[in-house]
Length: 242
Image (tube, rainbow, N blue to C red; front, side, top):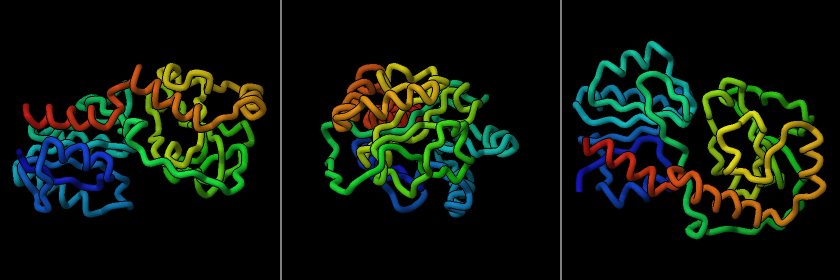
C-alpha cells in the first residue's frame, strides 16, 4: 500500500484510512490535513509548506472554512494540492467532503446517568451563537444536555454547511435542525425547528433520545451515505490515486 501522512486527524478517519494506506510519521508522497484554526495548530502551516516543497499529493480539508482567499489562491497554484470543505455549495477550487461519522453499529455507546437539562448550546469559539432567539442556555459540554440546536450563520445555511456533530451525537445529545438548514431535512426527520413554538413541542413531546439518535444515523446511511467514514476514506483514496 502507499504511504500517507496524517495531520490533525481523529481516530475515526485515521482507522478508516488504514484500510487503504500505510500511515507514515514522516512527510510521505500523500498527505491528508484536517485544517483547524491556525491558533489551534500552528504546526500545520509548516507541514503544508514542506509537503508542497516535497511535491507530495496534499488533500486539505478546511473544516471551518477558515482559509482566506489569498491563501486559497496561493494553494491553487499547485496541481498536487486538492482542497475540500464540508459545504454543498463550495468555493471556487474546492470540492465537497462532509464531516465523517462511524456507522451506528460500530460505536461503543456509553450511558449517562447524571441529571441533564433539557436543552442547551455549547459556545462556538468561531462565532457567537447565531440567532439564539430561543433563549437557550449556554453549557460547557454536550454531556450536560439532552438536546441542542445546530445554529449556524445565514451564510452557512445558504451554502449547506452542517457543523460537525460527532461530540453531540457521542454525548447522546439530540441535535435539532433549524428550518433554514434546508438541505438536510431528510437527515433530521421530526427534529426540525423554525421557531420557539416548534422548540417547545420538541421539549414537551420528544423522549426516547437513544431512538432519536439512532434515527439520525439510519437516515444518514439511507440518504447521506457519503458521511459514513468508510466512504470519506474512499473519497480520499480515489483523489490520491488520480
